[in-house]
Image (cartoon, rainbow, N blue to C red):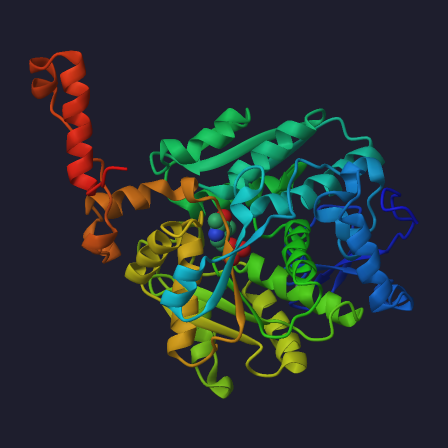
Length: 481
Ligand SMILES: *Cc1c(COP(=O)(O)O)cnc(C)c1O
Ligand SMILES: [Zn+2]
């Protein structure tokens, strides 16, 4: 089969409730189980037939598709058979998502850390965060539903102050047609930066007094009573699309998972569970013969998953936590929607990979900021959540959980520029006290004036240039050539 040929395999997918095991067909949009309120996974009931193809054959196919010129196979659907193999070629939206690069940390940073680190730059997705992986899948499925049902209108909606609304608005505006797009936000609590992407993509932005949870309740009410596609973490199609991260990491390392550790920030826990789920699928098909170790990272200001796993296995009980402000804003969640998914996948993961295969480490706000700045001073483009991963890698080393021989892939979940306000606060030493972040002076960076306006005005043009240049020379200690 040519790498451009759309696959002929079609699976049979169902929603499976992680609470009560109930199953539902995919000809409806479901978010939580109507029976028990649990969260769903999507499963392909004919997945076992894929095992007739050997691991080597899958590897060869996926590698061949890496050069595909078919847009439907260029993004996260390079791994079509493992993703949503109920979609037709024309259903698939491709906006350039997925296949983000993994960039090795330069020798200076590796030496400083005593660790072999690399960043997977998921900020290089179209809306500049990993959320695009999930949206590509969720909106492709929505397109297939619209086609099959002949819908003439459906509202794509989410409650989000950040990357979810940016990604959902982008894909909704691309799909257009029957799809209207709206975002519900807490009035007065959102920065112009967070509004910019949904507004720019033409979403109807609606504000509700209160906090994020109030918005979420409105959105869920709408989803229960109207023809609405909800694009928050409860959307299992989104989680499915995010499995592509794992497939890409495996392929990047030529399917050899020896000594590989993957660090992921945990907020609602959709991403880390999708990543574990993805590696498990590859393992089941023999595409990889070992699982990489997965490390979740949480800030001490929003650490319910860390706390759960820090307790003895016998006495673990999930408790939501009250969050305090965190620079890892996209992960600042006290009661993760996908916690049942974490338990489910962690158990399966540990059953195959051993008890160290999945672990959660906790880091401080200070460590997150220092690590983000340091990463970016070494040519990375990490957001605060990416900084959290580097802080997590350091913490794991401190705890003796990782060694210098292993390769640590850190998830830069968004582009550096998306959370730039925190960098400003670091450089200006203007963090509100509740963050508990004091900038390290040697990492602060501010523009410095080379020559004052008055000095400039007092000099003729050539003299002013020479004087300004002289000041640069002195400041930087330049030697003449
Ligand atoms: C959504 C998001 C997270 C948290 O991911 P979860 O799936 O909620 O755990 C982390 N970083 C960024 C940039 C995000 O947008
Ligand atoms: Zn249920």
